[in-house]
Image 1 (cartoon, rainbow, N blue to C red):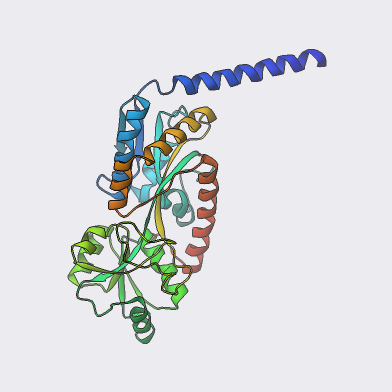
Image 2 (tube, rainbow, N blue to C red; image 1 turned 90 degrees about the vertical axis):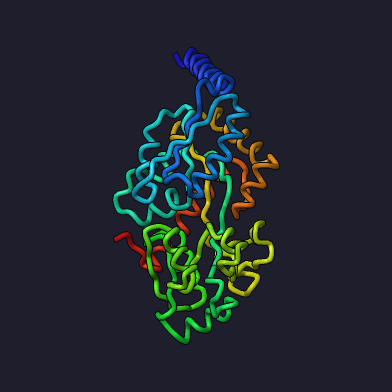
Length: 322
């Protein structure tokens, strides 16, 4: 019996391998859907559409973007994990949905690791510390000095408790020892509007490139390890002597758990090719993004590390969803 089992087991394994290979060769057999767990018009939506168009051209199938917003991205993400694990439905995951929310919500409707097959990290958009064009602050040093002299009196806006802007400011205050007053808004748009009007003193934001170039806001520093292509003259916090102030929103594609490895590898290959497209690079850079790419395994490790990093930040800052 033992002598017979091994050939049968080998045959079964070869059959499964052949089936997986056939799936990859035949993939895709229908349109691809990208679930965006945020409303249309935001960074997640824009990046998904830019990449989706080129991905569809490479795969020979239409790519449809479906927006399912609500609950900080949790509604669309929870709906996504119930999709078929055949590679025809992807999630445009973000640092919020797949790294921050696991530490913000007690009853998260999905497991940030077990329910996903990481495909690729596609782009990061660093938060930029911005102040109104007429602000008295012209440098990070001036801001930090004033924040220490006037504890709790200098206000900063964010898109809400637990938002990327809130997290970025929490990192900044911890590194610099500053004491700032948090003013949460229902979205980054209203916060940015109040910032330009001078109702709040500063903000960390990922969508300010246009306002900076239009001279409605001043950029004091970039919260990333490298400068933003769209703002080449704006230094990073590290260049200014503030190590550890890194807070970039990131965006990456995930497939549902148990997606065949060959299909996931094919998607990774095609998306890496898409990111090499000159038009795609320019559109992402103009938006303030840094183009990434890389292997699936790298993205899996990155996701795990980000979950742990944000867990510590949120605990230290005592950030909670009200």
